[in-house]
Image 1 (tube, rainbow over the protein chains, first blue to last red):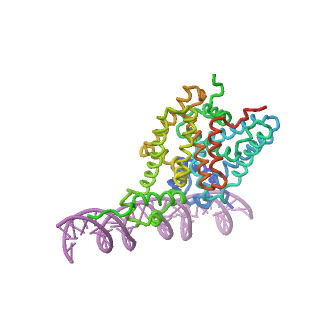
Image 2 (image 1 turned 120 degrees about the vertical axis):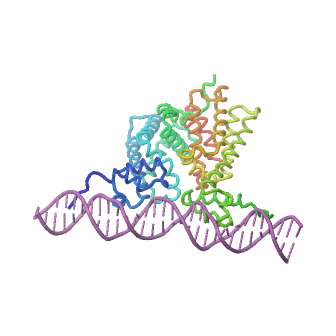
Image 3 (image 1 turned 180 degrees about the vertical axis):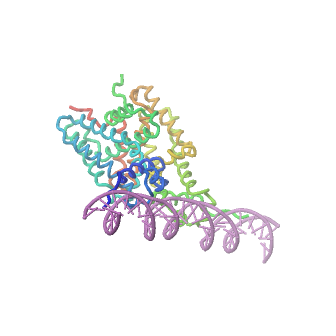
Length: 199
Length: 199
DNA sequence: ACTATTTTTGAACAGTGATTCATTATTCGT
DNA sequence: ACGAATAATGAATCACTGTTCAAAAATAGT
């Protein structure tokens, strides 16, 4: 028997993330992914069923990671609800900024996949969303969060805002200093834009 | 001489918006657009240079409309800054909900176009953004808005949130009652999620 | 009704790139 | 060192669809 040398499966995934982020899924060429991964075109089809499969695995991986991190966070009992919320923002923020190309891919392709491949979309996403909503609901119960906001709407509000800002940062990092973005996301989602110390 | 009958140019654009919204730009077939517009394939190329040109015209039209509406709003002197801000949200909200398929197309394709066709992207978008930022800056100067938030970041925050929510509404309207979404966008962007009447 | 002019048409073309698969290379156990 | 058995390869295939353009149809003026 012969063993597989190196880790082609991972090399291909990494190369695909870069190529998808750079060119967009449809303009990304399998041949380019193969080239960047240092692998033949045929090998890609040994490890992945087809082009869509590669994309799905990318989502599987990042949402899996986000879910597990959030799961650990939800379990902590040493944090107040606001601290937990801040920690969640930080966790999401760190995950995306450490994987900026993945962030771009998600920002570009997730909507389309959710809309037209809802069934084959990674279950980690739904689990992740469930945990996030749990934090907010608990915060409402403990009177830290406003009971009048719609949790589902808030979720889209926050993730939508996140997506635009992370993408902007990933594309032109200089215009969006990480700490400034992080601080503003936390502040705006908690306090909004109004000036509360009006004089 | 012969006159053109009907308004094929407009019919094609309307059909394209529906097909793009339904299938996504890449999976949208020119033949399907022709069929839905009640026009031959050849006619599409009489009125538009190519497939990309159709998409660009869609963006041109909606951002043009948004810009002109916001321009009129900025000129009004009978509104306080907060009222002006609310009116802006309402205007954007109304425009997108009245053109829900266009909203979906924008949500799906704008990022990609901005990233890879920045130069050929409608100038109305930049003008629109400029006006929006003007309102916020003026609000800060008049102490209605928090001077510590970054205007550019706030813009992405708000538009990103908008995009996700409008898309969600357009896809499953029942889960996102319009008035509830509108109220939550306004409230969250102004006050955030924290409970300010804590006891 | 006839001609000139413009509009419309859709079959055919052409470029593309994802995918296949017969062949080659590599590894391992004996 | 030899023969399985598995892994890797990439040229060739093939389906697909955006675009073209020569011909047909419609209109207007006379």
